[in-house]
Length: 124
Image (tube, rainbow, N blue to C red; front, top):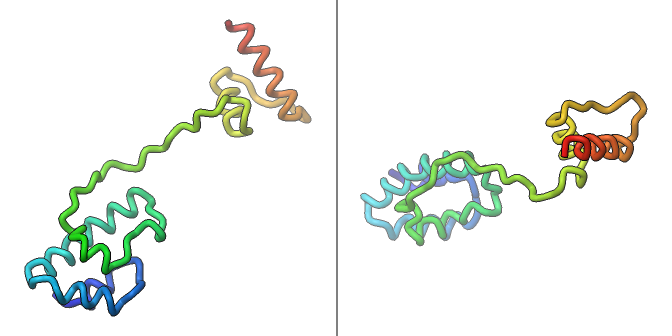
């Protein structure tokens, strides 16, 4: 494998000369391992929706032997925002659907939230 094969695949194109030097220091079998492992890392970064700023520089990835990392290939978990249902319009609409309510024509969000609160009180 060549450095160019690695560089072509690596998503973050910074410090090419330093990355080339890091790649050249690796034994041939580790160079091949790095290029092969990069495919899995690319899938991982995509699966986890990793922003480019959080993908290590290629020299860092090589110097730290990141090609040996064991990756958790489970899809990214969407965290529920620990906010109350009335704090955002989206959470309000989610709560309304849960209660079988829909906004009335011309009803403002504040009025709708009041109606949802009343329904919650009725069910309590």
